[in-house]
Every structure is written in C-alpha cells, then in structure tokens.
Image 1 (cartoon, protein in one colour):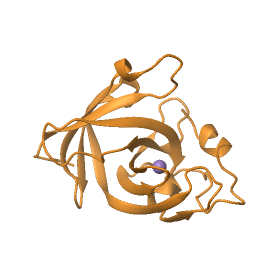
Image 2 (cartoon, rainbow, N blue to C red):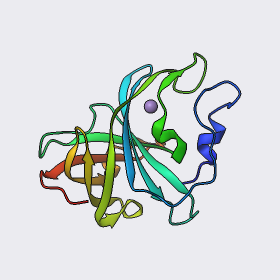
Image 3 (cartoon, rainbow, N blue to C red):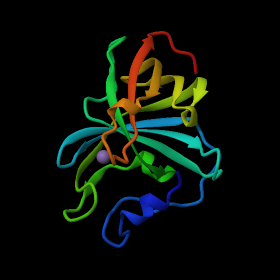
Length: 166
Ligand code: MN
C-alpha cells in the first residue's frame, strides 16, 4: 500500500487533514483516534516503514469497538488506507461533504515495538505502550470475514499479555 489511496480520497483545499509529506525515520509511535463519523469508530495507526515503497506511513485500521484493554477479548479491525505520518497528531472536525466527515480526537498514543511477524504476513505480535493501552497484542488477518467482491481486509486484534517491553 502507499499514500496514493489517501490522496485520491481527499481534496486538500477542502479538508483540514494533513497532506502527505516526505517521511523521516519511523519513530515507532502509534495513535488511536476516536472518530465520530457516520458510525463511531476508533482509528488505530502505527508508524512504520513500508517494505515495498520505503515510505514512512501510518498503517491504519478502523476498529468499531476500539482496541480491547482486557486480555483475550478479540475485536474486529478493518484495514484502511495508509495515512501520512503527519496524521498522528491530527484532531479536529473534518468538514461535511468530505471523506470521513466528523469529529476526530486522540484517544490514546504512545510507542510500539514489533516482537514477531510482519503486517505483510498477516500475523504479528507487538507491544503497545500508551497511556491507556499497555500490553502485548496479536493481530491476525482473517479472510473468512470477506464477502464476495469485498475489497476490505479484516483482522482480529487481541491482548495476549499484560507485560510489555518497548
Ligand atoms: Mn476513521
């Protein structure tokens, strides 16, 4: 994935969201943004260097029920387009008529570190250390959620351990 889809969905003269800019080295940050769009959801974004494009991007998922704070509870995460690194600090109101119109506020942020696997493998384990979210999490891609012709990528996320090391 690259930032092409992010650009295509937005008109930067009309939305207050950041336009992509050249990324620096990834700092292993993550953010969870509460997004009161047509449906309330939480956008989980992790700063990472894309293996193919070498761009530093925010790998992103919309999580309707948010990241589970309790161990073993699995929540659905729908992958969304990569976002530019500048989006990590974004808060505000996306104006009516624009993609994702509604209120965005930062619900949690912090640092993350990969333990095993990679997102490209559809199976990985990583540490999250935020203000609210603390623990070792697993994310697995689940093709069984796909309906015919469905372009979405579905994942499950759950907390595996309370212990965290960054
Ligand atoms: Mn969103």
